[in-house]
Image 1 (cartoon, rainbow, N blue to C red):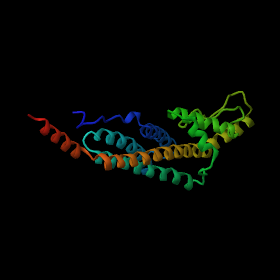
Image 2: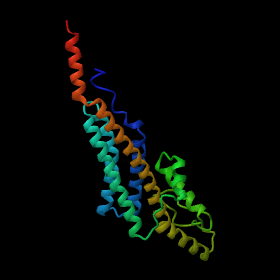
Image 3: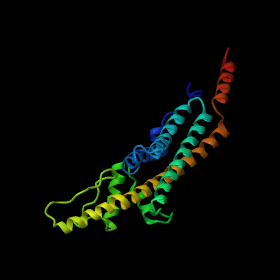
Image 4: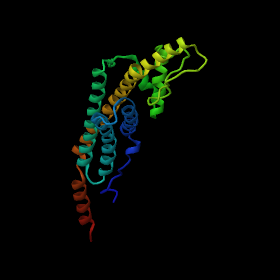
Length: 228
């Protein structure tokens, strides 16, 4: 049966799946924090992120009997993530926030960090905010993408507290959304690039080896020839 049904379903080891899943986790947090829960965009972004993950997995599993289906579903995953990229770009543009250019140094910095979880990406966002001087006077920044701090210690003066709260308000309304959206766009670019290469490889394999029908024919032919 190994000649007829090849190894399949190993999608969890695919780098494209891992990055797409990370994007999905971040998108759920991002939308809950910055997009109204009743907004249609909220649901569309989360579903597009989920579609990217699910179709990679489904395609990998379907490869057992249909390389054509695997290729199609992998391309669907790629298209879903492209849709999600546009949503993040729209988020930045419509709010007058800056979208990083391709040569922006923070893009490569995030890629080199090789974050595995949404919390690690959140920690990186906080770190960048600190380096950029966007934290409160006591050095506090948001602890993650979902829940930046809203107050400071009670020992500060009223004036200092107001200043810090104003800074934290800026963090919540501009800095964190801008950094978070751009960080996700970087990860989406990585995921899409990986999927482009994956689709190209699948197409080449299908062209060279064919699909289940071709394997079935070869197995049946070999079986008849070996029969006494």
